[in-house]
Length: 273
Length: 300
Image (cartoon, rainbow over all chains, first blue to last red; front, side, top):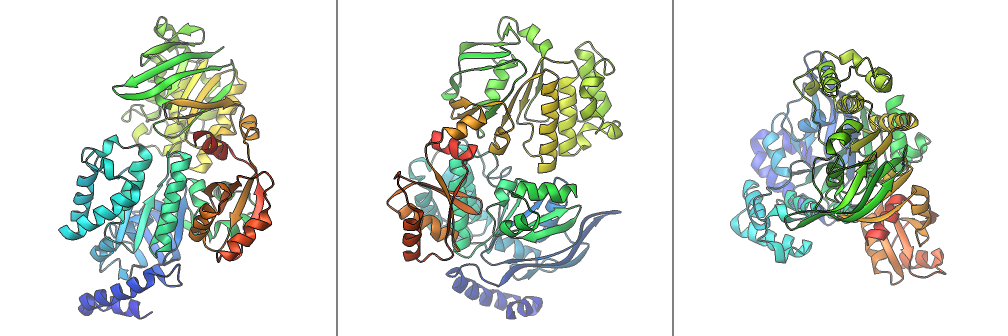
């Protein structure tokens, strides 16, 4: 808990960041812990008279795969934009990776990775160029980028195609590559937006294995989706309905609670009341 | 036959989008093309709706040849493309009236057919189409595709990007349209929707893997599948892949779907092995085969 008192003390921010890194590196070796990497209390966002996010409260543990579900228009995207520091809450408290969203949004952005099916990589750059480009954006040194590139290319088996345009890769490979690119700067949390939509079933499984591995190494995985088959893979899921979190538990427990066979049924029961 | 394809192929440069595909859809049938992005689904739709010429093969829709009788076909089919393609700056009602007019009919004349669907968006009839939610856009697009009373309806990934509630409603609408005698060809990347079709074609990398009823596709699966779970999913997958008798190991929601090479597989043996590998709270239970399992086995 010492972490939270550190981050609130703005004057010692650089020192605290140093200290926090050490703790994280130590924890990387462990699996899911009880440490909360995301803390949200009464988070609210209003647009005029409309309350898009209505006093939601939840925590996400370090190394957890957390599913953030909701129908179109339920408030998922608005909530997520606040968590990643690109939208200011109307009220409520949010701490992400040890940083307060009101005072340290830039530090949050450096501590997270983001991948969506819609925005991934630049099709007209080569694989190598994409890695260099994103490495540069994340502020990695030349040597670090070089080292990360080798690691990533080896792991994904992309050695022979590293100078090919990303547009020439099959969709499944693009998805795996963009996931790895989003992890280049060793973020504490990776946000995934419908990561496996449209991908063939076998590649989708390989993708989930990558996600499990990432979580196993201590990175928190935050998945927003409205595809319930993706929800089934998460350790815990929250379901938003009309701006509120109406359910939050493991898929197994939610299925028991709603007497449902699948997360799809849970969702239908919740949304239809 | 309402739709028939014989040896249809189409390439874009070096890329084979559709490779020697043949299938038939009966009158009044709800037929699903099930496959991931890039499998060739949209190319098939564009060939059948006369928007694209095949390199090889012949195809007919509602008895008309897609090349010779292309103009005739356009009057007999409704097409809802994957990308929302109505006029964003026209209102809901203006869009519908526009499509009715180009087909030489009126909203009133065919209102019965679209009533169920249109009634849900009618309260917003003065809203511009671009300002509608995903679910409402989809209903408007379907209404526009139906307003000239087509015999055959082509729906290219109508539920992509749509939440579970709207998806369920959409499939209920399709079932009702089918009862009115309309033949429907629908594509989807979502395997759970396959079960809602009369027959399906599983498609990947430009080729058809299998065509059958969803029930029979599942029945043809050659192995017995087990749900396996433990406290540590990541280590569990590694351990199962290391087990020398494993045939397939696929994460499947909160479980791993496991199949064994042997016919006399004994789950207790696997349990012993996993315990030795340090797994805790092991659960092994046989489970139902899904379309997705069948797809993976065929695509292997």
